[in-house]
Length: 261
Image (cartoon, rainbow, N blue to C red; front, side, top):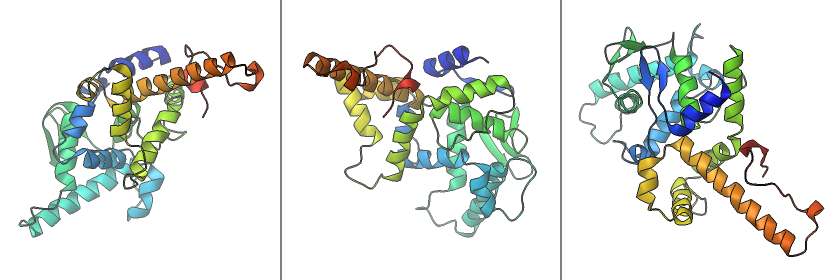
């Protein structure tokens, strides 16, 4: 898939083909209404997008394929065993249950975990060590997840172009990363603040944004809003008499990756 086709798919919110099924985009409203809460789906999404290097210290052996899948597999198995031993613990959120609910949102079908095979998706596809890395690339693309490594798309030229496309969203992705790391800091701007700002600027209700945008689309549009705001501010500075050479002037009809902090 070339860069132009990929960009249109992401911006439009098209599902991505995976095996004989599709990985769907998740609206912001679905994240907020996730069975275990917005914060928990963020945690699950980050765990599913971990790099091999991040999980290897937690594995007793180094698997030949997809260490991240085995990390998730081990956590699920551990959680099932813990649930059997503590069936009266109703307060604890099960990683196993949350992972199943997350995958249901992505595939829009039933998910079953089988200790022998992995995650069985709609009785058609098995998500396991053989295809998990390809699945991980898709969710990183769709949901602007962190830790997109330089090697993620090195298998062929089309995927390398996809990697470059994601890099141009780096600014928005870093904002999301900061929000996750500083969620307890009351002075830190969170996603809800950004949605509020965007809804005020566009004169639409916050609910409209939650119902109609996924994370990729919102990051793209908020990034564009920031570019336009900087453009208009710089125009005012120039009109006030500042020398053009001293103003970082760039028209808002431009590629987002050309903008600098």
